[in-house]
Image 1: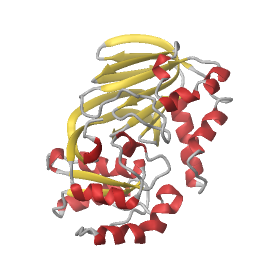
Image 2 (image 1 turned 90 degrees about the vertical axis):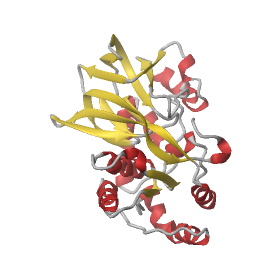
Image 3 (image 1 turned 120 degrees about the horizontal axis):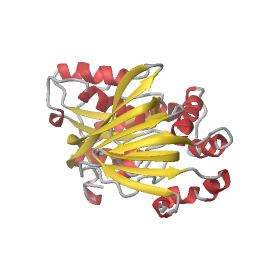
Length: 307
C-alpha cells in the first residue's frame, strides 16, 4: 500500500527508488496507490478478498493506521492471519521508532526480507464527531486535549503542503496561546478520577509527535494501555519541560501521573480533541479498549521484538 502523498509527497517521489530495492532483494509484490483519506483501508479489504495476506505500508503513521483498519474492519478472517510491515516515509515516523526500524529504505527492505515477526496489541477507540459516534483502530499512540489540538493544526498544515520534521514542535508552541485545560473525568479499568487536564497520551507504542516519548514505558505486547496524564500547567512550564517529552523523563514531573489499563473512558465538560496515530478524529466522550496481541508485524530482528 503506497501513499504517494506521505512525507509531503516524498513517498511518491521516492517510489522508483523503493520499488527498485524491493525488486533487487527478490520481492514478488503488487503495488497499489492510495488516492484519498482511508483509501488504503478499502484497498486492503479488496486485497484480502483476493487472497493477499502480507502487506507493506509505504508511507507514514497514518498509512499504517489505514492498513490496520482494513484488516480489523472485517470479521471473515482472523486478524492474526495477516502480516504488516512498513517502509516509513512520513513526517513523524513514530511507529517504527518503537521497533528500531530505520527510515533508510534499503535497511527497511532488508528487515522486511528477514521477516522476523511478533504479535502486538491493537487499540480501538470510540469517539464522537459532529454528534456521531465513530470508531478507529490504532497501533501506536492516541493523544487527547492539547495533543489533539496540535495534531489538528499539524494535519491542516500537511494538507496545505507545508511540512518538515519540526512541524509538530512549531505547532506545539503556537497552540499554547489558544489552548485551555479542562476538567476531565477518567475511568481506568473501573477506577474513576477527576482532574483538570492539559494533555493525555494513551500508548501502545512509546513515541508520538515525531519522536516525543509521551508514553516511554509502553510495551506493545503486554495487553495494556500506558496512559500519561499531564495536569494543568502554565505556558512557561510547558515550554521549559518540552525536553522531557523527548528524553523520556516526562513521568518524573510533579504535574504528571501515569496509569496502565485495558479499558479507559474519558469525559470532559468542554470539547476534548482526539488524535490516534497522528490522525485527527473527533472529541470526547471517548472510550478505549485493548485487543491483546492481535496484529502480526514485521520487526527489526537485530533489535529484539517486544518494545
